[in-house]
Image 1 (cartoon, rainbow, N blue to C red):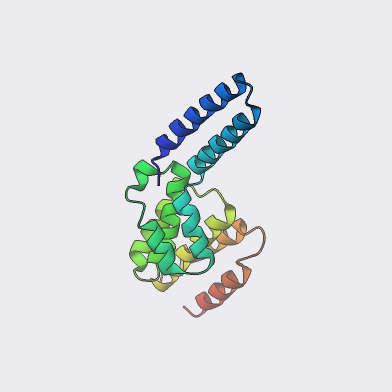
Image 2: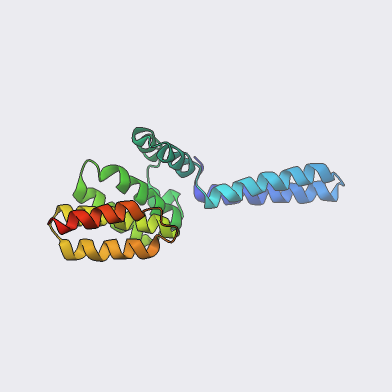
Length: 171
């Protein structure tokens, strides 16, 4: 909702107010204001709209996820770099069901920007492998599946990877 720099300015202003409260010996007010500043700093690093979009994605509500993502008008200006990667990641997961080529571009953009979590990278590569397999690019699909398997440390995508490898044998 707030611009990324506005969140930092608000946090700095609230910290200044907290210091003034500590100087006036209003310790309780100062602590409460520091907690409020912490919320603004948290929301700088974790965008509130992306958090709500991930909540919808977790419920497997693609329409709800897309609705929240549409609220972000200019991701390059309103999101920090890691948030941009997750924005394109979520967009790619939604779009890939409708338009594989566009979804592929978005997922590659998310990977290039840099997804932080290994399982998110694995999921993106698994989806890219599916696109490559559907476009009859077997070598690229095999490479992406192997990379996804390496990144999937907890084995959450093991069944999907195995199923895709079985499907690739038929190509």
